Image (cartoon, rainbow, N blue to C red):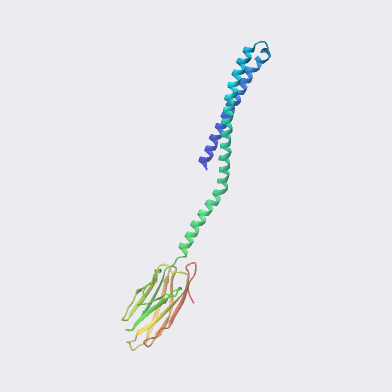
Length: 232
């Protein structure tokens, strides 16, 4: 904007200088010619000479006036461009700022989600997590195309733990199941765990498993558009 204003000032000064030059030539021509007009009746040669001088001066003045008009037209164009910029610039800046703000908000809304389960018996307990798209993550399906989530740890002998991790959890409802794959311990397996995410940890309710093949729903949780996680 500063550069354009400077350019306008230069154009304006140039136009004024040219106009002053043309006006000065016209005034000089008038001052030179007028005293001779009353006395030219008896001198055709003087009239012809004066007409020739005036013709040259008028041609030069016409050229200068044409240059002035071109310069003034350029100034009008530059002024119109500046007015358009003055109207558009705040909108452009606002759009840029809005875009950056939305990008920051999107980044702030992202959250990782990690589901951890643990048990203290010698049994083989498996973690199953179903995401909002219906993908079921467990030992035989650790990851899926197009998703950055995965079953990160699988233990076949307790005491142990299993971990499911999503670096950027998508919005929606998730289901957490615990499956008694093989029951080898005489004592019931009490499976605990937690969801660790951007803002902290949420503990899962304990689930008791007593026989092979049990697969109860341990918990459901929601990830909202702001990246908050809550149990259902």
